[in-house]
Image (cartoon, rainbow, N blue to C red; front, side, top):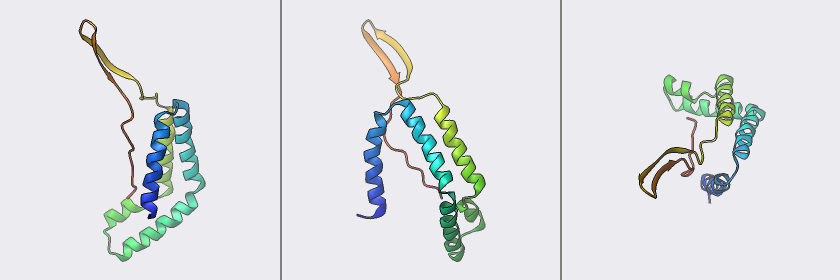
Length: 122
């Protein structure tokens, strides 16, 4: 099994754990991700520079190179976003709408996790 396949399998397994975790556990996880990004920033920046060199050699346009560059400013933005997300009210299990259509027949719209969302930084 290759690295990406193994990583996706681990994400799927982790998603089921997160689905039953508490709001505090999910908030702590977001904060830990931000801390790990900051703690590993030198490695991330070095690897990004390697990607930038390969992209330049491949003739990638300046506009795309600009998006590929993961700078200290982008790291700060990402970690700030994670911290802000951790401060938001938990959306899971929230009733968004509730109405009785007929006696004893109630329609309720609730929020719940539907799966895994992946983000790939260009």
